[in-house]
Length: 290
Image 1 (cartoon, rainbow, N blue to C red):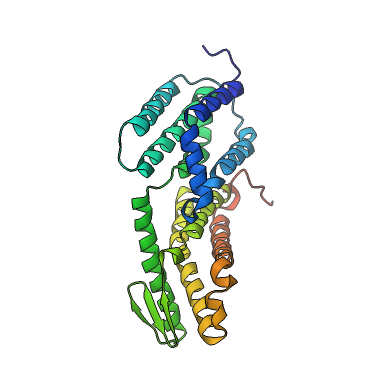
Image 2: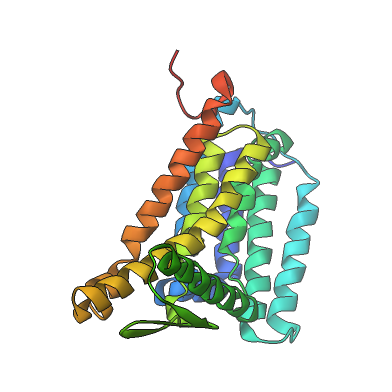
């Protein structure tokens, strides 16, 4: 039987994970810091720690060891070994498997150290750790291509709505005085993933019913496309009607945050509308008005 306090046991197991998974961790954080496609990874650990910290007292958990979690720890070690020495294909696939095994180790460590009640009390934060697994490039390229096509269609609809003559060929648009090419860099993959991650956290904190949480997350997907279509439409109209500098200026290069905040505001409104339907059954982490 484990003689160490649960918290110390967990710290020791996490320390072991840092030693065993040092290289995948460094590669993953370098990937997140150096490219637009994985920025959301940097938010995951702080969010998970905060959610568990906020919810621990509320759940009134009595820590205790859960020995069956050892099986998950052993499985994570096996997967890690396979990722390192198993010749599983491309480097990004191997990195994804290595990080998945690390997440499994953390979940297993949490369950082993604090017991099954703790595991059952925090399904969302623990599963939210899966966002730390880098999506393989082949899958992410498919997502980016889909966002390109959908963003081009969304912006085309906006041009038509405002009676601006427009023609579209794939991801290329043409309006009077301007040709627009929605490239991979214009797909808004970073803000789309950030919007999805943020929506999941808001839904978890502010809603109780599972179907309401799923609904608001589902709303975030087309909304991420719509906000990028709005961005393309706005920059194109300003560039063709006001000043061509808008096509290469700060709004084009750094204005994504503006449209992200617009989408996030709409998500928050959607959450509040759904939250009203839950009445007094709202999340215990958020204080209610009497």
